[in-house]
Image 1 (cartoon, rainbow, N blue to C red):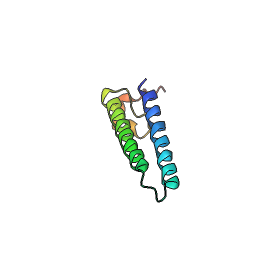
Image 2: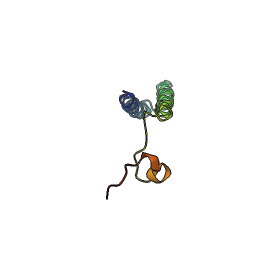
Image 3: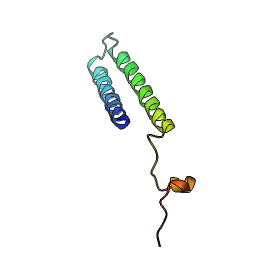
Image 4: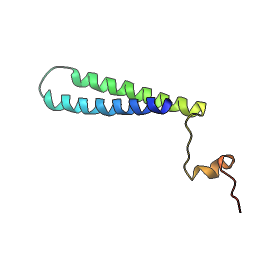
Length: 82
């Protein structure tokens, strides 16, 4: 469930990015503040995304499976059968 929330937040950040780009191109010389609102929305969504990732790491729901982390955390590796 947490990974779904992270993906949805990431897609929302990317959508907000392209919305801001659209406002930047279309509102040249216009005094509307839509571009600033899109920036504010993107900042809030990015903060929520980072907070969600930090929560997942802190609770153990998200973990790294990178090969270089095995040296740091040898207890997480499977024993090698010979």
